[in-house]
Image 1 (cartoon, rainbow, N blue to C red):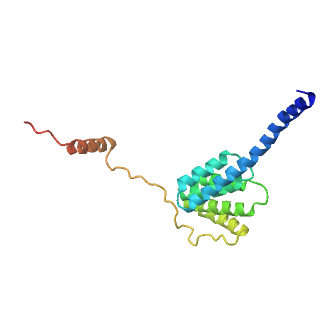
Image 2: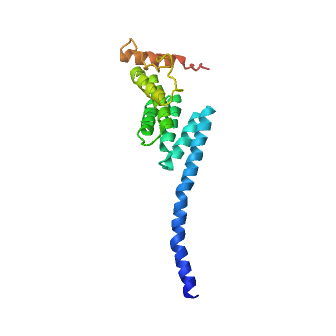
Image 3: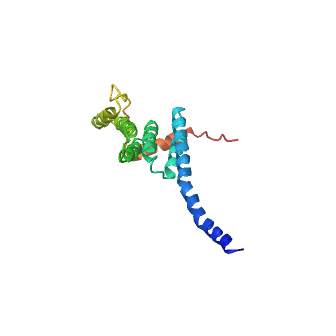
Length: 183
């Protein structure tokens, strides 16, 4: 091998890894975009668990340019699933992104408002819906802000003292077990 061939091999070995590494972010961008699109399609089909999984996979690729839109969409999916606190975190993550993201921010504000409404935080929800509508006049808030508010779970305490309640349950269980007939 002469000097020129060795030099060419060294140049290729030095430059090719840089070219390959430069291509990886584009691949991640395409993969994250495809997963985001998949999550939107699945959510539109009512397959929210699968949609959330696709969103989480897209987020795991850590493509910063897609993070806000993925999080805004994720907030809506989590709200539909009844995971309101997580929806607020996702919406806030989308809203924390800088740049000209009017559409993304309007969707994030709307989804945040919806999560707040379900939590019964009506005043905060009204503010979020107003911010969404200021960015996109087509995003109208619900007419009845208390509609679909998730009630606070209540528990009914037994009127019996603890020992009597436990005894009553034990009697019920023992009484429901069939006795063996003697032969």
